Length: 72
Image (cartoon, rainbow, N blue to C red; front, side, top):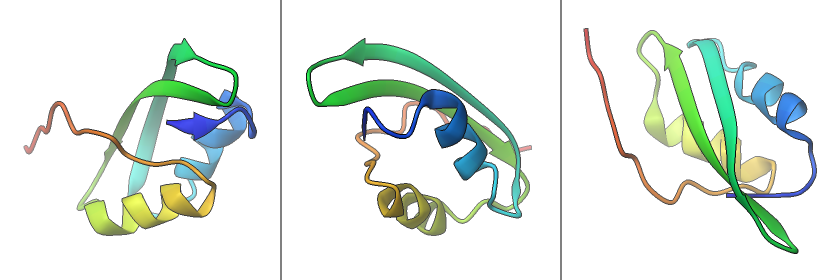
């Protein structure tokens, strides 16, 4: 979940700033008067989940759940 700002494209680019991240897919699931609920898929190599959550928090967003993890 994130505030309305930044827009989706800027949010995706922001997530892509992490060096381990190679691909970001962001889709809008629901919107209310103050927030947007998103489905975010992040791909990369050796992504540090705690670092990713902290990076997301710095832009005013929060992770509510992790629904799928793939390790290859």
